[in-house]
Image (cartoon, rainbow, N blue to C red; front, side, top):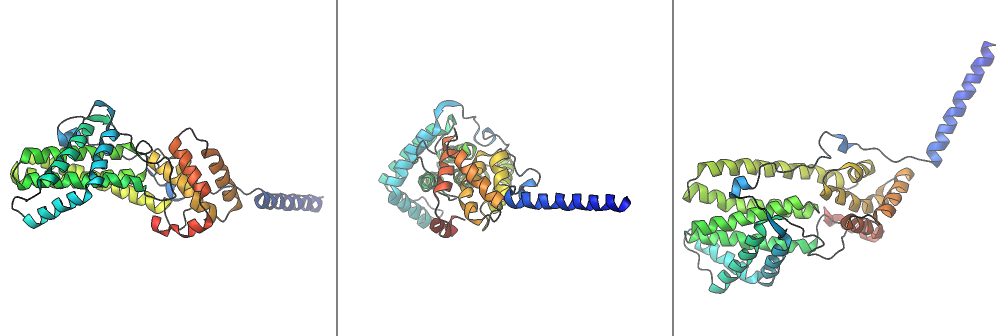
Length: 329
């Protein structure tokens, strides 16, 4: 009797194991997360120091600051050679008053007037308002680079005023640029606009520190700026860690799925949707492949136009394009 029971149990276990293997072969599951299981990886990390601590006011007016920054960007791009000439004049002057042409001064002040209007507004929406409504499987959006031209112009203007000892005007230009940077960080539409915003705040930080250390002698403002600089570094480090997960040579599918489904930062959710275009070629599991296709098919109809555009870019990416996307990282 005991032998019969033993054989029955053995047969049951063999059949159960066979059923499990068949299920895994014909109905494989998707990968689970690994790197994104670390504490805090899916949180919306922000700069908690209010921008008002640096600039002395809280941007609160209605309207879209992105509209003003777009006008500034148009001018900056159209007059790029003029601003380059102004930068060269500053470099040649060293610590003396810079000899910037009247035409360059006029352009820089016009750019600054648009930035100043935007800096008073509460919110900014730029991506897909002032860029083409399409995305590529890439960490950058080419049209956003126009904002970098604005950053350069504002930094030049602030330094130019410092060279002529117009410290209040220099401070105003740097403060407005600082707010513009915070607007870009807080938009969180794409990691490119966040990194541009961090760069804008670093560009504004330099003349502000120079002003408060050498000319206005404001120790309290210097302390605030030092704390803010550390907050910038923390956010940059956090984004660097996420970058290594999403834009690695071979992103791990389970982490991409986890970011899409659970990340609180819209910029990284968007990146993970774009990364579906990469893992649809690199994922080895059939279960992952099926889930990738299911996600792309669902997300192309998402109510969020950015997510829908990212899913379309991922779905449309060809194998040839995939092989050529090494420069995206």
